[in-house]
Length: 624
Image (cartoon, rainbow, N blue to C red; front, side, top):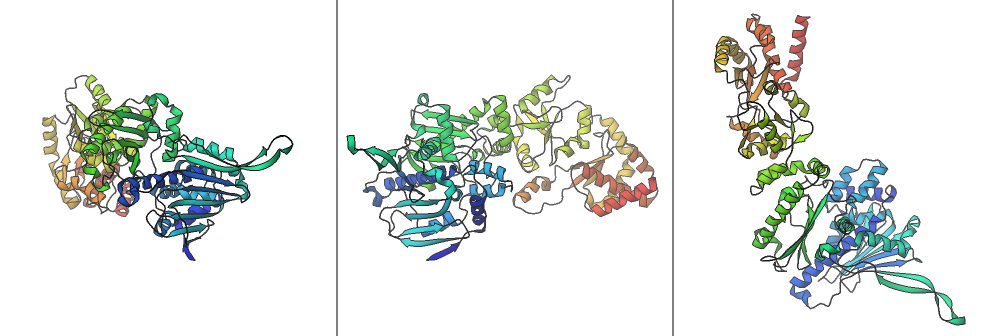
């Protein structure tokens, strides 16, 4: 008898399933049927691609057996089955990123956590919402030994060898007393119809009912065994669109991708001609929880002539579209196509290219409410696509949205250009932007002062981690150049005579500031870009370290210190007074406060916070 301890996270999950989560208990059956469907898909693939299985007579099916006397329910399939290693991997540890994501989102609030169950399902483990005990008897196709997994949902489980003739899996569930509703065959039918009607394999329900048997005086009440198929068993994507209702698409989506919300949109397309294939794609209303994890679960399943091939290939669509769920079913790929060469397959590349265009076109056609929802959930991934998908870059730039210094909410680049074109006297075709981490800091940045005064709109990009990489790579859009206002002279700075005169007048102050601040600044300059602030800091765009900082972030390394240029406003009272200060101590403290306060205004931190606080206190003491 081999006993094993559950992985810590699984123990936590099982405790919740056993003691806390009850309102979505019917979902356990959806999860078990979905797992059985996957097992049948995988064996079907083996049977058609591996010689040793080709001669096997095989009739794929899922059986659900109700036993009221035993207070039990059994769900079985004749799919690929599992061996001991599979049992430990699939049932004893977190094998799917979706399960891990579920645990990370748990709030401790029973009601909220109950709602999460509907979204995630969390596979096999959900059975412990209704089970007093679970036995899994399974045999992997092509192997001799069968195995039995047993658990009551506490800290341990057992795995032992057993005898089983046919490959596949039987999940025997000893139901809790308060879960007897699942012994009602009408209730089970209702659940299967609701969640699993379009599973492409037949689902049979086996149960007993009491009926009058016999004729005339010999009629008596007896228990009669019944068996009936309770699902349509047709692959939904193979049906004509004219035969399908919205409810059919939504139920299919819910069954295969375990989402309790309706999808934002779906696209069902059949291509005929040089290539024959069918695609059915969905965009979830809410972004999958693992979407920014390295171990995210791919959402697209590949079939060849209705035969399941894989659901683990991450690049059936480009990575930035990893939120898309759906089916690709090709008539032209070979059944034994290697998973390793899928990325290099020309047929699949053509299907992928056409599918991307269909998906992006559908997104552009969303009504305002749904489009806003899409942007709220997926704008960051669209930015990712701008950087990686050069073929569809123009379309993605039409979709992406940004915050703005002039309008409420989000704006498109096209609307920015339209507003700029309507501005009186505007001749430059430039889209201005400012990148940082905090929207509030960016909106109050001294760098915006000259643009506000000149009535010029600036895009506020507060997702620095991706904007800093993507936006400079855009270059231009429809002939309009994208310009980072931190790297160029501000509007009105073209008055070179005034700037030269002020620079000459303040040369002694500039040199003194350089000497005082030393290596803390790359340079000190006089600027006319400021109207309210005494100073600002800007990066030296010519320094290669500026463009390399994001590489250090991506590698998880500490970013090198940013080479900054301190720009001073010669028309600000503080700068005028600073030029006249003779006291070296006060000048030094004021110079550092000038630099550190300019950093703070841009969301940067002073190098020595304690010294900054001390200098501010000292200068205030002198002023009061």
